[in-house]
Amino acid sequence: MTTAPNPASPIGIIAALHQELSGLLALMRGGQCVHLGSREFWIGDLDGRPVVLVLSRVGKVAAAATAAALASRFGVRAMIFTGVAGALSPQVAIGDVVVSTEFLQHDVDASPLFPRWEIPLTGIARFEADAALADGLSRSARDVLADPSSLVGDAVMHAFGLTAPRVHSGLIVSGDRFVSTAAESTALRGALPDALAVEMEGAAVAQVCHEWGIPFAAVRIMSDRADDSASVDFPRFITEVESRYSVAIIRRWLSGSQAAADSRAG
Image (cartoon, rainbow, N blue to C red; front, side, top):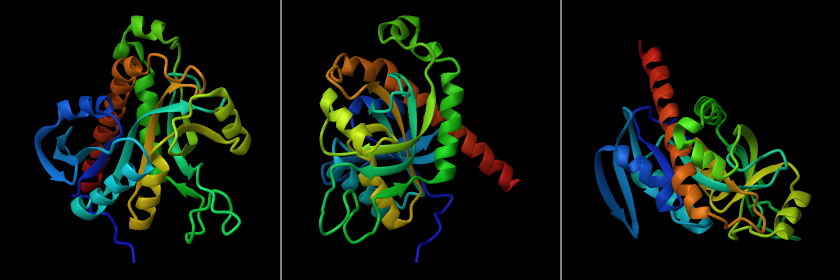
């Protein structure tokens, strides 16, 4: 039996790389660090909301272990994953934002015992994101991207060829491989033509949240096209574009969800 999330419980916010989390950590108030295993969970207040910020590190196992700790140790009411990803769809450009509607682990294949991509003994290949959470993040991202140069500056926009970044909603696929060749991305598009982006953590967190009954969604900023140029200026993009987008989107979502909660309470 699934228990409804407690509105007073914190929101878990996860990132895989230090640069993706540092901007949010700098804004946290009353931060208290709890060490579990090799991870640091930062408990505090972000724009009036109780949160737990944590660096998962890269990959599905690291992300799943982090999500399980957020669920069991901290009792979070929802989880959000933020960070970069590679664009798969031709309609998704570098600098665009993809908000999840569903997740799939593209490197899972237990056939012929189970269908390709299905997680054994679950009957599920695609894990749905929480619709309300994803919708709120999409609205927040559209608000933020209405004036992207105010976040990153014209010089950075020009350096990365960013013009009018857009927000997309759809399938994000995850696997324990950094997709960085045209051949790999072409194969993924052929197998999963509706996939918008590829990364290395989200679908694992989605599986954990499904099992715990915790709302989950991810917001990913496209750093590359998951092809042979995927590593070009990657560190600079995270620092000068992704981290600023992520902070602005998460803060906009937190303030909007708090206003909605206050309205219901009134």
